[in-house]
Image (cartoon, rainbow over all chains, first blue to last red; front, side, top):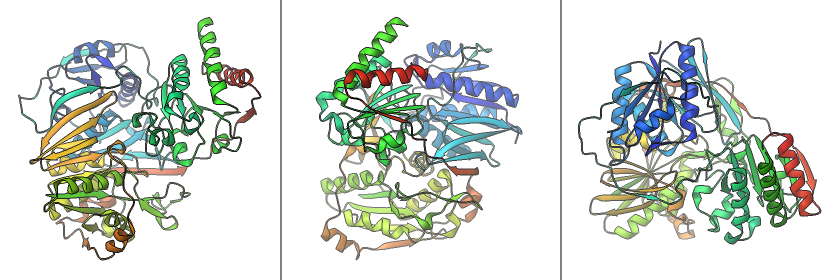
Length: 328
Length: 263
């Protein structure tokens, strides 16, 4: 089935994009070019116009802006309708979504409406013989699958953060207005928006993650993890032991019942490295572990292991990182 | 009120995985299957809603699995679910996430529901798209990633986790809610629960029962194709140094990071 377009859904809030939006816009534009079809980035809701300006730095051909689509009033339903309408108008196409909570929901619901296939947790996309080929880790990263679409008219791809490189290379960047669907009362109403960690980069999207585990001994010691993460410009992660003990919220948890992350650098402090943690971080670029127990399993799969006291080493490392960044 | 919780059997995380080269499917026979850990939060939430509402509120567990799925369902019954339904049909083997959602939605229509509860993901596929797809097939509100669930007077309110906090969302029933790990601490089955579970009914369902044919399901109904799948080799073991003092340990890390050009 020849495709007509590559549609890229870019999440934005009040005009702010997350980095994965730029990564997907770049990758989507490259795929569209290989297929010889236009790339169309879509931004919805209040702030969409400001977000569109930022997308002009990427190689996308068209930026569809739905400033008036009421995604801030109803849970996802308006976005489902707007994207469904756009994809039906374009005809056969590939659609890329971020593998965020909202991205997964949108992809699933639009796939049902369009009878499309969905490829999830995609870490690489290429074009072979005019069709998309995706790489996706399965079974907690213990296996890698190569997946294609069969005969579907639409193909939907969920993209993992930190998988594609973003590139500053302005494309045509033609802005088109996406009209809001007729005013409609949807069932799922957003009554309140509560920001708890405003501005913090999510652990699944950060390029550097510094995680703390049981070895920290208590919530009051997470400050050494936070300081190192801040010095490296990264996010704070945690093992299940630290989350279950109530030292830090679940949104920081890395592992089987938390988030799967693949940052360029993962530093595990006081984490033993049980299989349940390993499956959430084994795909990281470089893994450094600091632990006082020389027999900790994490030393079997890290790139650099340091056997020693995290309360001494982590603050000293933070100081060295600051000095180096100051000199750079 | 009728609460239905969808659950899945998954291979034990600790088991070594092998794949059948003929169809790229997991060799499930060689490994122990367990109840998807994420589904326990949905079961627990269903039981808590039932305990709070009382009256004629029931919790039914639904799964799509081979006959071996009975063991997994049994654990949910031991936790306190009232009854179970097992959709088992050779034609559903090889279904992708969307086809699975379709089969579950058809089963839900057959058994009836006011509130559908699901986990947020499975530990084997980790795709998180089945819950929203079920809701879309059913045409009911899709309230996913809920860390708090409150049911009152035909309405459900959830706190939906977002990247920066949460959204407070309300919708009328019937609706679907996927429950996150933050929602509760699942109970362990009691001895009494385990004994009682043996007497509870697990209703068999087949595709014909739910009014469906194989064309929409299994491999034929799946719109994606796994071309190949291979185990990922273990990460090679790196260097491990023993730090005698903080300065030495910190220096070892910074030198490594600089050499690797990650800072």
